[in-house]
Length: 224
Image (cartoon, rainbow, N blue to C red; front, side, top):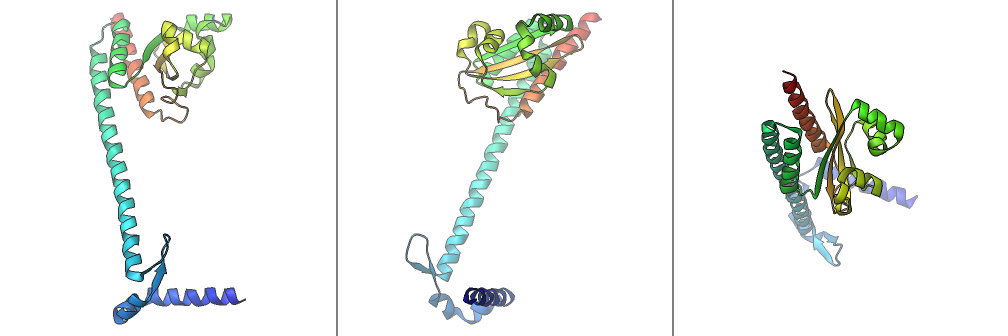
């Protein structure tokens, strides 16, 4: 019962101070007499306590601002790298040119350790699925049609990266689609945490669309 009375009384005090903001202006001596326990021990005046609260808030806002600046800087660098990759892909004339461009750009500008582009016709994929060999082990991934990140087992690593398989601790897999072809753009890293399951895939989606469009444009041009 006493606790309820104390809480009601405290609420009345809070309400009064909030509705009379000039109370401490009229009673400045009260500020010097009020002492607030500090978490590190001892006590400080109400003004000192308020100042420390403001300083803590300022530091928190400064940290948030720096984080936003870092994100903006990273996004700007990412856009510049993607722009450079786009220009080089536009200049590619063959599938090998596209693969070479992807390997050069992703290794140099995105710190990839291994890059492979596996492409198959609809018939080849169907035959692989029937025989349960090769790309058949990626059937579920190809059905979802979304990029994925994480560690890969030995068979999948070997199928994608061949002799480079031992150097890949994690990988990003990106589905590639054109009118005539389907496949996977695989980006591998020796670091098992580089491409983890919680990693954002927005960039990977854009990259997959870019590569798919480049291959589609090349295929359309060859028919002219």
